[in-house]
Image 1: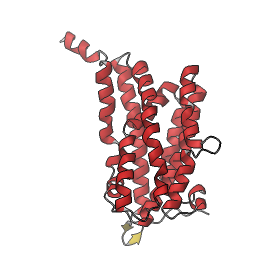
Image 2 (image 1 turned 90 degrees about the horizontal axis):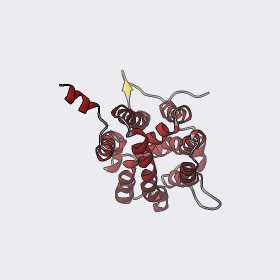
Image 3 (image 1 turned 90 degrees about the vertical axis):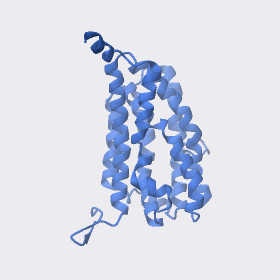
Image 4 (image 1 turned 180 degrees about the vertical axis):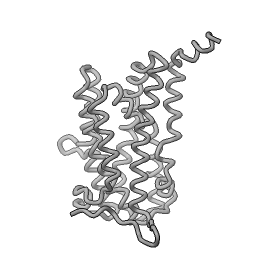
Amino acid sequence: MNAVANNNNLPWTREEFEEKLRTKGQGYHIHHPIHVAMYEGKLSKEQLQCWVANRFYYQIGIPQKDAAILSNCPDKEIRKEWIVRITDHDGVGDAVGGIEAWIQLGQAVGLSREDVTSLKLVSPGVKFAVDAYINFARQRPWQESVCSSLTELFAPHIHQQRISSWPTVYPWIKEDGLVYFKKRLTEARRDVEQGLSVTLDYFGKSREMQQRALDILQFKLDVLWVIADSIMLQCTDVTTDGVPYLRQPVY
């Protein structure tokens, strides 16, 4: 009995640990109803615009999250690799970064630059979830924040899904608006290598730490799911006793 208990407390092998992290992809927001409907071409133009406008708040939060990781990380070699994530989103010189590419996506679906960048269309739930993620990165050890970024493990599939399906199911979207997804196909795969290596090395020392890593990754999955929940509420016709749901008044 004691031998069984001891075995249950031993750390998983590196391969087993990685597989458990990857299995978390079953809860990735690609499975959320709004993303399923998006893939199937069932969103209206207004609903897709709502999604793009809200997700911009997440896009502008990514480099803030990565800057927080850098500020907490004393390892020069890690910083030298990680800093590329900020320039990927902010851009360098004349090169278009992810934030600008997302604004172009907004324009491709019929929004103006001001519609996107003013954040006037962003729901309170999206703001709360993204801010919680940034605050996690600011307050927790940098290795935990790196682990929270591992939803990148599952991102290339969702980007490819949009590149493949949108021209067919949403032919009215200008193709140059898909630049963001094409950029992230290669960037996300590169980022995964570093984030996964740090996580496997740092959290692989004990079963307790490995479970902590799984919990952290679940937190990030929850953040993305709540974002999708909030967007779906905002862009879906919901009524209570015949009264339509309205966005929070802003004065």
